[in-house]
Image (tube, rainbow, N blue to C red):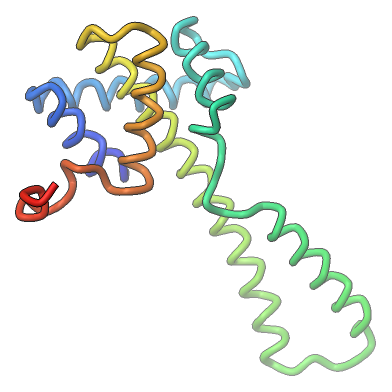
Length: 169
């Protein structure tokens, strides 16, 4: 899991407590898994976490993906149209392999998107709980959690960079 290697060092950087950071990460993973395995839909078990998720979605902090679903849909439509036009014409090996590769690519990117969104939720929940423990108000903790989510999921996080790189920051 990406969040184990990027989020836990960032939380440890904030709190100075490595074991506690692993526990916070584990609890966030457990809560996120429980939410989805029980068909959680949009409502989370804890009201405070449910409010956090709604805030994060409205702010654009979670739910977005590096994979462009719309572009993938347009590609599928174009390929379907092309295949319909070439229906009676023989296909060479490269065209057949291209079709198979497209199916595998779509399946792989679907998995990437869902794991990416899972990581966003885990990072946001763990960061929010950490900031609340450090004394931040609910609105402050929500905003700080979004910032930490962006740092660990899309930048690797300060704590994940090599030690020598920290000297110039």
